[in-house]
Image (cartoon, rainbow, N blue to C red; front, side, top):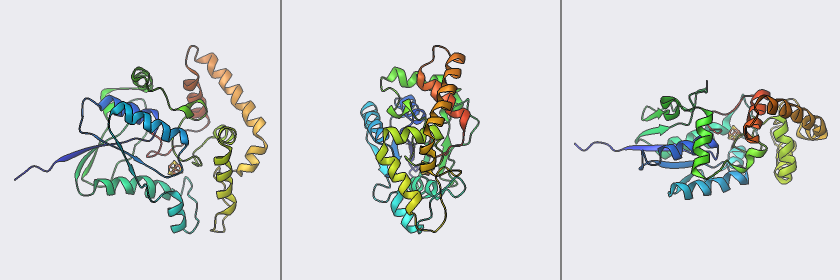
Length: 265
Ligand code: SF4
């Protein structure tokens, strides 16, 4: 009897941790298959970063769900927009595509959770997909991840100057300052996010940000920016000699550490 081949898979999100894991495992597990679940609503910086990762890895990243993005599923859900409590987007756009990609094959899925994180990553309920956590197993923490990224020469994703996570541009896990920055850096995407709030078809009052509409948030952006700058100043004093993106990440983590365990690694 021939042994069933075990596949090795690693999902890239366009974020630093999954990128660092791909680099960390590149020579250790050369047969690894890389994939990216495309919601069709990612930031342009994410798509650009994925292209850079492909070059560095010397391998194609398989794009999952290329034909059926967020709007397709929103129509199927009859205009019911997702939220932290009703997160159908993660299920339909991230988890199901991975499980379809693997099918009935035996697979080892490498997950980029670090040893200094107290979180649970995506663990498939499918018995044929075995999760493995190399950073946790080898004791790698945030500073090691930044080191891997730096030494590879790829640099951190461009959105790190204003946002600490990959994922959809309208992700409801964004912090207020990230919405403000989206409105300044990508006004077209901010406008699209506003349209979803105003034009969704299920009859509910809906705000991505739960407690206020994006237009209300934008109207008081000076106040949000002032709070953010104050926090940055304080953190810079507490974390001298650290790059700005590290300080920013700490400030954003202080504001809220809610995140999607599938989309934001
Ligand atoms: S990034 Fe946010 S909005 Fe997009 S699929 Fe993930 S949880 Fe949903």
